[in-house]
Image 1 (cartoon, rainbow, N blue to C red):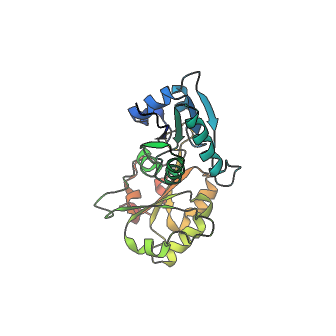
Image 2: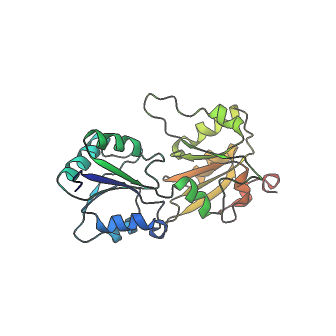
Image 3: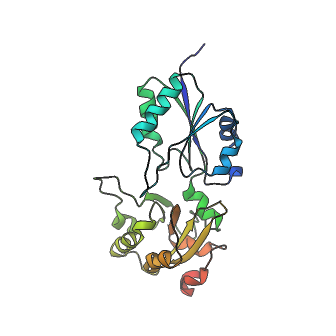
Length: 255
């Protein structure tokens, strides 16, 4: 009999519990302990047993956050105590979710890890307003990039991305939208490039705006678009049928 402790890293998707995988729902229902990120929709937690211990270990930019090392310690302690531990993460554990770091820490402690993918917000948020992140009529592919550089890190190469011809989907970029837009324009991307922002996708608080790269920062400020939000930059924004203000994109860009 295999007695190796196991932790499940489960993607909770973008919000709506109906977008969970069947495996994710089953593991949430059977968990003894849920370590829950701040971005996990509270409706998802209704699937848990009344006896499940729910531990909030939120991590949000600009807010008081749980130290990553402490999250590792909690998972290790609970798993070694024999609990069925589910680390519940917004979106997908391996898409800007620090899932790789958590896997490394658990395996180093002799704990097995199983990863259950979730729908990442970089796909789900644009889809919520009718934007396909890939569409061969508009772009040869898509790049998912974070607007939040690691401390001491160089961050994304915006000049290279500007020249790539790819749809750009930016996570954690609202507070840095002005600098990102400027870097992309300086890298050669036209200021008239269509852009959109989708906040709190697949929740009752969902909001979206359409604009251009050149007006992105001022539009976010004027419309009070706040995190969590996804930025989409590229011609695929023209396809978005459910955007709040598609008229904000110039007619020539929407044609």
